[in-house]
Length: 273
Image (tube, rainbow, N blue to C red; front, side, top):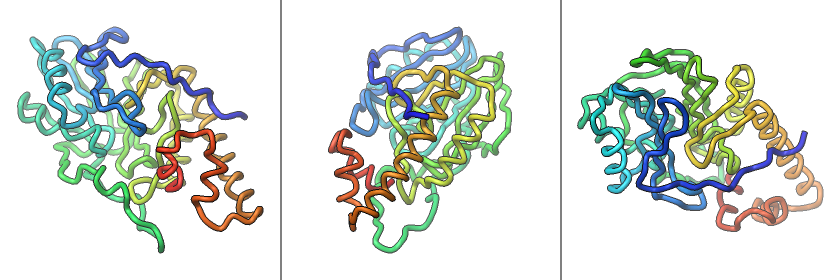
């Protein structure tokens, strides 16, 4: 199977809460970068009593946009997919301001020890101060007001990564595990490729076909897309083996060839994978 077809067309509409489907709004933070695409997506679910998924980074304008979107409503639940600083930091503010508990898999931690010769360029990206009020396990269901959220443990991009299914709606909030615009960065010590591949399989064993990711637009026909992601990673693995057989002796040498069509600013992240 070929690699998935990525969708790089996305209008973030900063400063606005965009209605996607009945009872779901998206607010995109203005923190665009090669790693965050057009910015981090926060999602509001519900009508009068609502849940917030991934409040986002410490950004004043993003915080004010979310406050405006919540005006006249009651925030009852905060869910965090993982503890990278573009997703979790504002959860503390909204939890205190609205007296709403934070639900997540756990605090920030490494997926695996670093091997000899590896360093930790992602150290600054981890929100090490994050503390959830409620620890979620795989399969836990949180009953909100008018809807239920199921926790799906999907480590790989980050050790504590969770996706959240909106039960009965064919929708998964996939965080950074599956995104339409690009593959997820899987880099030590935060990420682990074996975990990532196993987590893709977990999603394939579910029924949902629409994913709302942490960056960019929605993923449709999700099972086909996820199978393409698995094939893409397998092809990368084969490409690495091919470069070794052809005599490459360093990771940068391999990256120059394997990722020659990728933005050079992402070659460092590609090397970590």
